[in-house]
Length: 335
Image (cartoon, rainbow, N blue to C red):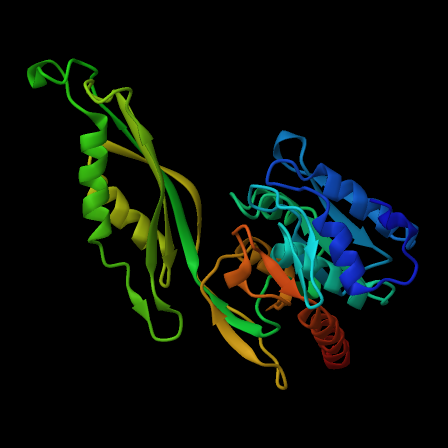
């Protein structure tokens, strides 16, 4: 995309270039290569930190960093091309998190003691953060970029993401004595799960459940030999308890395969910054042990993410750059 030619970067122009680079989860390499070229043009040492299936995290430094800017370079599908209006940028990743990354780069490039970590897989299983956490140095602070409406997040909910698998016996549906349906077993388990109480936290609010995907069966007149569902619980207390509740509801007839799990967390805040509680999940649980303090901050709203009209306002981008610079100043002054 020609990003390596940037010398004086404008956050809106950089955001536009990043949005134009497709980087769906599992296919992040074009984004990695473009960011690598940009960092190398600015004189940074770029280290590729591999994860599964030949996917690469990017770690860019000049010397030993005390602060790390971090975000994820993958997006949810499908790719949505860039569209610009007078006030907004539209497109996949506009706020989650191409615009956020652009604001971090404009705010932090060239600053002594500041490094950058950009990982893959956050939208699916956090594989990038999990593997990167084993290869990066400990730092004084990590600034995680997600769309928080330019407010420092006080905390985030945890997650339990599982796949449920049920198995039946295929047979003609007119003869129930010859078979049984995996779909029926799955629906019974899902009905029980929907009635579970996953708790309410005084600050984080209520836990929530989403049955995101259901599949199975071969025809209306055949007992389904297999069926599956993917569900996600946004937890407000220890996530193992929610997992245990799900396993109990499924019993022996439905298998529970854990995809991802982490607990709710409390985050660092600072005076002079607006704060908020967010319900979404991030890579922070897998990275926070590498920093004395973790901050979650970024332009854009999560309510604009993950749908065909994903967008971010240009004003938020410029404000995000200013807030990131203020945060860096506060951290270095404090240390």
